[in-house]
Amino acid sequence: MSNLGHQPLSPLDGRYRAATQELGEYFSEAALNRARVSVEIEWLITLCAEGVAGSTPLPAKTIESLRGVVKDFGEKEIAQIAATEAVTKHDVKAVEYFVRDVLASHKLESLSELVHFGCTSEDINNVSYALVTRDALKQVWLPAFDTVIARLTELAHSWRDAHMLAKTHGQPATPTTFGKELAVFAGRLARVRERITRVPYLAKFSGATGTFSAHVVAEPGVNWPIVSKNFVEGLGLTWNPLTTQIESHDATAELFGAISHANRILHNLATDIWTYISVGYLTQIPEPGATGSSTMPHKINPIRFENAEANLEISSSLLEGLAATLVTSRLQRDLTDSTTQRNIGVALGHSLLALTNLDKGLHEISLDERALMADLQANWEVLAEAIQTVMRAEIVRGNSSETDPYAIVKELTRGNAVDAETLAAFVHGLDISEAAKKRLAELTPEGYVGLASALVDYLD
Image (cartoon, rainbow, N blue to C red):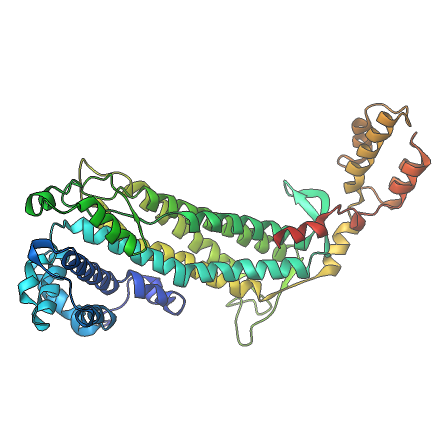
């Protein structure tokens, strides 16, 4: 028998706990039960306000006291629900019995049968998951996401004039600026952020098969769809009137798809930064006391970006798996969604860990502009695009008798290393106007960046 005792199975609750523990306030079993208790209590308050079963609106002090149970929810309440569930073998029923006990402690036993009135477990669960997911994104994930966007934007502005050789297909291409390249990522992330924040948090509260059947039989005089709609919207969610026993999770799948898309963009950022470090464009700032390699003392490995890559891949796999599973259910209901949703926090946790590493990594790099300039000076052939384009324009203007400029420049440059002198001689011999020759003669790889620097302003 092992002497290790109880140890966390997931690295999110072990090695990486410091980076992800905030999500436990929303996605732990205790947090889920706290949300369930809140939904049950708010439903009871609503029923009394509607006078269901002859009840009367609860006094403001009573409402405040009942809501205080949620505010003060802690170890004692967690243990009580766990003990009850050990007997009921049903998590939501255990919460219902807990709320009944709360009413008894407030001398409200007469209202006990209004607890969970007309509800199926999914009424409580879908609302609870919508609430915790919304709040976790707003309070934890989005701030971390915004921090990375803000850092990218800062670096894009700082390095907007740092001219660099672009690479397409891994080969030298038309130059750009380092800031513009980072601005592309910041812009992509900003767009997907809008998608994430626009997704509604749908919820249903309509009974066993989404029909209000028991409600209507018990209290035929109540306009139950309006009561349900007001209840859901009062919690800051969007009411879904057309459901089976479960809320269909389509909006949830849309949300997870958008977050996964954000992960994929961040993964692209991590691999590009890693590559820039590899070719020497970026240098890493050593962390005092840190070790890069167990055997090679000189190394500073890009661990922040490699860690981010792996965790973004895990997160997207989980989010996409969750989305695929949640939108399907056998007929009215099965329990695949129940166990699946318990992993929402895990999926977001891996993304949050990646964001933490990316933010740290982006604060631990500096730009080697000498390396950028050396690469530009070694690749004069990238001016081929400019030369053949100017030649085309000259032909259209009637200033040139040249034919097929692309082929002419290709013969000189494709697969060949050319230098400033070679290109200058080539341009001098072209049949184009002197003004065009002058523009091309003054052109250098580091000066051939078009509007790259100005494009960074589109982030503002």
